[in-house]
Length: 395
Picture 1: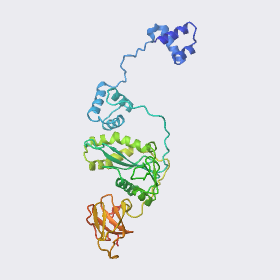
Picture 2: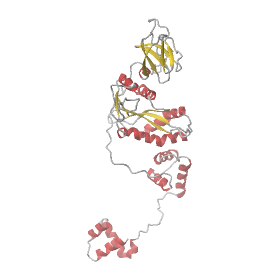
Picture 3: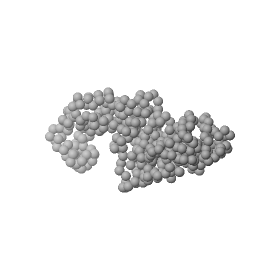
Picture 4: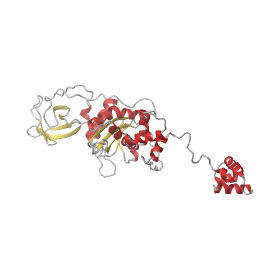
């Protein structure tokens, strides 16, 4: 107020022009003229804004605000502001916007103001077509609030659209969880061009911590991707995986709350809910259209996927025609085409469902339960393939 009166006094004394006085006050010339007219009509009191202290005619009713705050306190206390606003708009005829809702929650001390963002970073352009590059990562978190422990959420997302093709909870991220995710995606969509991941030990062999990966020594995942013709691209910083990092931030702000609201208390029910309810809603809400029409996915027509997406270990057969693997002794049954396999090198395949098989070259000699008990007769495979149909392989 004193600055305005001082500027008006200097203007009336002729020491400042109208334009100069407006610049001193940091207002437009037109607004300064309004202030001048008010001052001349009513003195300093004429400059006081009469709206101060009055309730706005457009203000929300107090009982409506209290209802909204009570809903948050009792039912949605662990939701973020955006998630909460989407939910009450869907469940009730809530007429107020997101910014107003967030402001009211902040005023009531129910949520905190977000930290100021860091400096600007330029995003890596998305791939133009779905299937050109998929991103995969795992995130340890307390996803099921009723269980006092963390699980790893394995998510596989398309870089072109941010469409999440696969997401599920496991005890610990590793080779088997990667194979399960890849099998889900390929069985549903087909082969894709490349996979972008971090440098976890199940993805890459890294001789020196923080250094470059050694692609001459592929892991089980690397071997499987090479067989499928999928390029494996390593990431060297969290910033490079920004889309996956933001995906997990979104999941951490929504999935545990949804699981709590749905009354889910075990992993099996949580994975079913993620697959049938959460992912379809998430993709509808957050997926974007690709830059170009078309798809880079190619239909998979090779051997059953689980034969590639399994752990392969070479072993030498003992004198008793048994193979030692994982503390088990796997007996090779008699074969019509060979008397014995003593000292022969065979491959043990460990499938994501825990079952085992012994292969000599392309020939399956036997299959076993996770405890080492034989499943089928030698040379015949009645296990379902990736397409769900029974398959036979005759020795």
